[in-house]
Length: 105
Image (cartoon, rainbow, N blue to C red):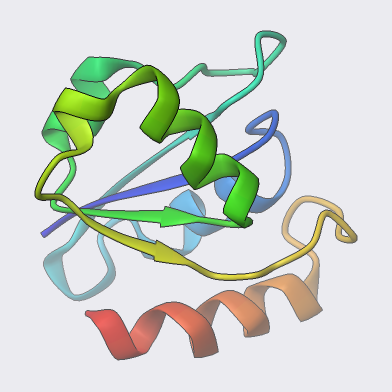
């Protein structure tokens, strides 16, 4: 399965998720941000590639729905409700991600 993780700037939360889940049980993972100053910005191509899209917050899903309505149609999207309170590869963040995402894999 192809997993896409989205947060605001693709520097901490979604990048940590990509590192955790790329190769996890044979899954492929990518990450991106929804803001203009993102390290890697979400694109129609990334959305098309994904089987499941994990958004860290509701605002991330809202942003991609507004910009990529056609591409996201029919895609499985999950909001993880993980706030921007963590550093990259923070142990608590990794635990939250594992607990939140595993049930969907």
